[in-house]
Amino acid sequence: MENTDKEKSKLDEELLGTILSSKSLSGDTGLEEGAHSLRKNGCSIELRSTPNVRIERKTDHPGINVYVKDGAPLEFVHVPVIITKGGFDDVVYNDFHVGKNAHVIIVAGCGIHNDDDCNAQHDGIHRFFLDEGADAQYVENHYGEGTGTGERILNPETDVQLGKSATLRMEMVQIKGVDSTVRTTNAELGEKATLLVTEKIMTTGKQTAKTIFNVKLNGKDSKCQVTSRSYAIDDSKQTFVSNVEGNAKCFAHVECDAIIRDHGKVTSEPAITANDVDASMIHEAQIGKIAGEQLTKLMTLGLTEKQAEQEIINGFLA
Image (tube, rainbow, N blue to C red):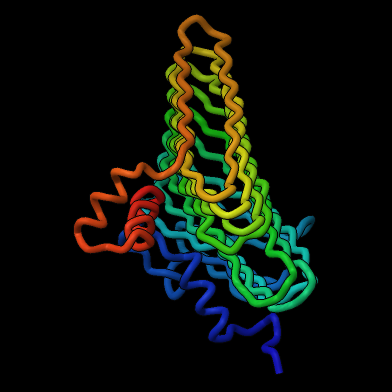
């Protein structure tokens, strides 16, 4: 008999282990310690606050409010979601309020295991409000698996408001197994605010992925850097869309770097708009196949062509 939605099984632990792991983090204590919220199949099954981080369930929507105290030292907050059945459509609204000069690392993400013939879908709407001088890192891993014919669908939306001198670093990774995704990020930056985004996506089969970045640099000396790395193979398709506006003296750099194989397709649609004479805006896009000389070099070291290609992809998406 299947575990209830209020319990954790071995499958749950495996999904959590996949979506909570990140090469960019050190000192992460996981769910065992620190503030966290765990959601499974539409139900909140664990919730824990700490002296510096308060987590409350919303009363008007499914989801949580997270409050990080002013001046909080380094805090870890985990907010994973797992889905273990098909025929399920989950929508969650999470708001993060990071106080003045607080420092926090937020680890999120969703893992879907679908052995059914019906789709399993999760749409996460996350809003970030960073006060003056706040420093936050947000890590979001998406992963899908299962033997069913039903799709694994993830549509994350992230809305960001950065106060004066606030910094947000976002690492958003689609590991594998996601059949369809539309990933939307909207951000507005205040004076001297900084937004750094790294996105990594891999698609296979007939999977589709679309990423949309809408960024407004409204404050003087605000900065934004978006780096998207993607790998599309088989018959999969990816689209990268960026709309970046410089409304004051600011700097923005948007980079889309993609590798395609087989019948994979990647489209980059950049739009940068300078509405201030002192706005500096740069967009770069590069799409192509793995260079033959890269494969040859690795194969001379004893790797097969398939192994060499995998090593290149691992390095590209690392």
